[in-house]
Length: 306
Ligand code: NCD
Image (cartoon, rainbow, N blue to C red; front, side):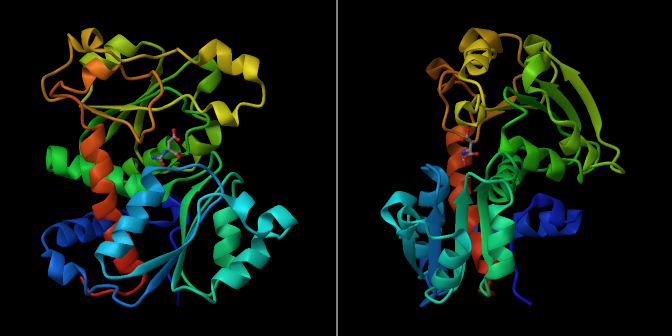
């Protein structure tokens, strides 16, 4: 059966830990050995929404494993502009490549693509729903920073309503042992009930607050998010919350020395650049781990030898 990666909810704890291990294996390989893993294979990269890290790290991951890429980063240059359906695009592209990575503004688009496609489909973000490969790289980052994921105290901060990255990350972390959560957001951007309910049965300990200072003083990880302007139905609502949480060097005065700040990026103004040179900043290394993790993901889904 073909393997897809559509939602973190489809993965159990063992599978999440296995993915971390795939990343570790890739990291331990020579460039030469890496170049053999997917030699001669082709990845289709279909991006219907803007991206820098996700698309480029997938492409770099494929190239570093000896594979090649086709695709688009702007659907308006494709037959989508002539009215072609997503289903027909998938029915075509699957004939040209060995796996498809798709980012789309509609929730559920990646699942639909996976149902149609005969080659593996990877969800690189579907609307405000899920972003499973970001989560796997986040887990890999935590493992590298702390030597573990279990037992961490994690504050998810900012736009918890529309950020697909925190929806996926929360689902994944809730599968690990004794992870304690703080949800820090404006009232109107709270973590949706349906996201929390999906982890029912896990013993996840959750505290919801608007108090950012307390979260900084009492966490191991601050996971910042961008307020997702493009997902707001009403621009006035965005204006009200756009500067809700801003992390700068002075706000980190009372942070424990081991505290790490993560962010899927891009940042707008929620992390001041004066944080970049502190011992807490981990978001650029995190972006680097993204390529390694995506090598692990592609190798696994395409049956490459690790
Ligand atoms: C995120 C996304 O696209 O959801 N970016 C990413 O993939 N690293 C976060 C965001 O856009 O704010």
